[in-house]
Image 1 (cartoon, rainbow, N blue to C red):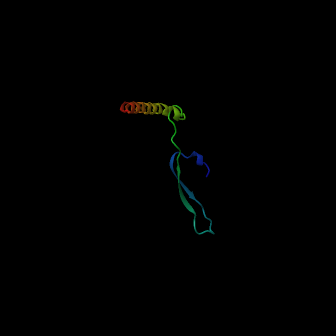
Image 2: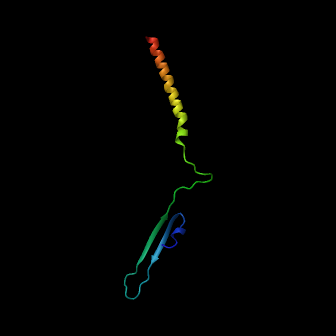
Image 3: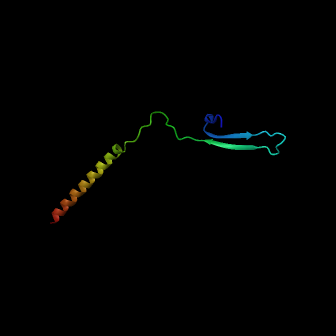
Length: 82
């Protein structure tokens, strides 16, 4: 399809009509609907990959601190019983 790269986003109707001569009895006429879609584009700024380790580090530290505190409290309570 010539000029297909010039379609804008959305839907475009294409009418394809063939001419016939005196030997043919059935004209060929087809309608086609073309939908051109792309992914979202960034608006302003730049796209940077996410550093998952840097995002999770504070939460992992908090969880480790909670586990250490609960363990310390449980050991201290267990020693007090015996």
